[in-house]
Length: 88
Image (cartoon, rainbow, N blue to C red; front, side, top):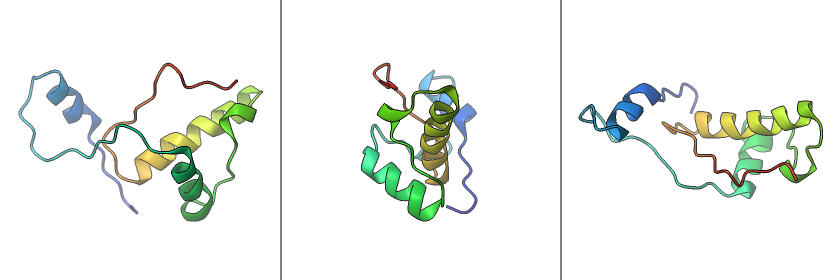
């Protein structure tokens, strides 16, 4: 998406049952790493860094930026990270 407009605040209010949805929110449980890699390199022209090889803080930040940018630019209203997300 050229101009994604995720609405995390409304999404949060809906999850907390404080608000009735005004739209269908775009949410995904999981995106395969290969898909994120493809979009990162091909569509977003960013260098891919394998998460398991990110040893220093700078490369770990780049990995997280790639994931966040992918979910954001694909138009998702939230980003799901699990406690098992590791940098080896």
